[in-house]
Amino acid sequence: MTKTEGASAIQSSTDSNSEESKKTVSGHAARYAKVYRFFGFGHAYNFPLCMSMIRLFHPALGGDAVLTNTVVGVIFAGGMLGFSLSRLSDLDYDNTFKNGFALVPGYWYDFHHGRIRVGMLMHLATVLPAGILLVLQFTPVIRHRWILFHRMNGYTILTLFLISNGASSAVLPHKQGGGARTAAQSAEAFLVIITTLGMAMAWWNIRRKQIDQHRAWMLRTMFYFGTIITSRIINFASAPILSRIGNYYGVWSCDELDFLYKHLDLPFPVADYPQCFLPDGSLDAGFRVAVKAAEVMSKPEQFGSSHIQPFGANVSLV
View: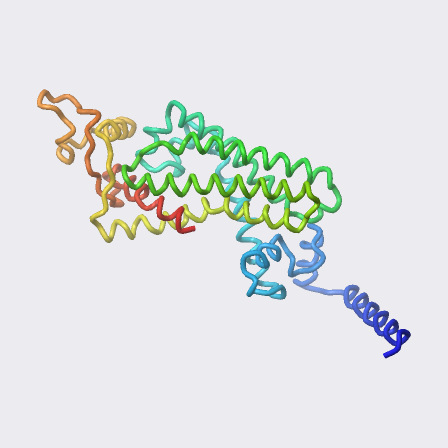
C-alpha cells in the first residue's frame, strides 16, 4: 500500500467514525446518552466512574460491557454518595447517632465521653463531607471544564480524609466486646495505614505529573475507604448466622451492663448476671462477665454482642 492509499484509508476511517458519532439515537438510548454526556463522558461504556474502576480491579471484564459498567458505577459512586448523605444525620451526635442504627447496644458506653467521643465527632464531621465531594472529583465534566475546582476539591478531600484517619486512630483503643475487639482494632488500624499511604502516593504522582498513576492510586484508596460500607452489609448478615450457630460470647464489664440498662430505663438483669453483685448487694463495676451473642431483642446486651463479635472478621474479610 502506498502512502497515498494509506492516507486515504485513514481519512476514510476517520470520516466513517465521525459519521457514526453523529448518528442520531432515539428512545431509551437517546435519554441515556443525554445523561452520560451531561457528566462529560464521551462513551456509554465509561459511565459513570466504572470503566477506570473495572480496568483497575477486574481486567477480565474488558471495556465493552455497557450494562456491567453502568451497574458497577451506580453501586460504587452511588453507594458512596448515598451512604454519606444518609449518615449526615449522625452529626446530631447526642440524638440521631446515639439512638439510631449507627451504634449497636453497648457502644454508647465508650462513645459518650472523653477522647473517643471527640475522635468520633471529628471522624464523622470530616469523612462524610469527603464522601460527598468524592463523587464530584471523578466526574469528567468537572475535571475538564473546571480544572481549578478539581484541584481545590482534591486537596480538600485529601485533607478531610487525613483528619478523619487521625480521628479514627483516637477511637481505635475502645475495648467494647472483649477479645473480639482485637481483631477489629487490627483491621481498622491497617485500613488507616493503607488509606494514608494511598493518598500520599496519589499526591506524589500528581506532583510528578503522572496522571494515570495519580488516578489509579486515588481509585484504590477510595475503594479502601468504601470497605466500611461493605463490612456493615456483611455484619447485618453475619449477626443472625452467629446467633443460629450459638456458643459465641463477648466479654462485658458489669459497669457496661449497668450503663446500658440505665440508658434504656430497664432494670438490671440480676438473674442473668448475679456475679456482678458483691455480698452487700452493691455493683462490682470492674467485674467482667460472658455475654452470649444472640439476636434477642428483649436482651439488648446479647443483641449488641451478636453485632460486635463478627465485626473484626468482617472488616478483615473486605
